[in-house]
Amino acid sequence: MAFSDLEILARILECEAGGEGENGMKAVACVVMNRVQVTYGEYGRLDTIRTVVYQPGQFDCVREQIRGTYNSQNIYNMRPTQVHYDIANWAIAGNRLTNLGFALWYFNPFSPSCRPSFPSEVGQFVIRIGDHCFYNPTEQYANT
Image 1 (cartoon, rainbow, N blue to C red):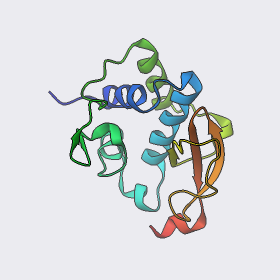
Image 2: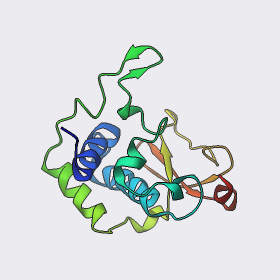
Image 3: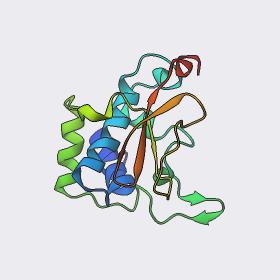
């Protein structure tokens, strides 16, 4: 059985940001929805939660294998709770965190500081929420 977009988003929230609290999960939901809604650049060719989340190489939580080793922390093993569905519905309804801008990327640097750009020069650091650094698109992103 294929997951609905709501189920996919709830599972990605639990897997990618389950330990980041409500704002951390909301921020990740915003990134997914920003990618769904952007009309230019690489993500402008995607238009659903499913195509964004399952785009190859974007979310480790979609991979069952990472570098040849089984990844037990994947969306297929997640069991979202009501908070994950509530945040997913919040984001699908068009709500966004205002301090996040129009972030299209995030990552955990596993250090106290965030890189000024990610990935390469197409994303510019905007805010850190919990362990994740968030990045807004630069003008160069339009050429991806």
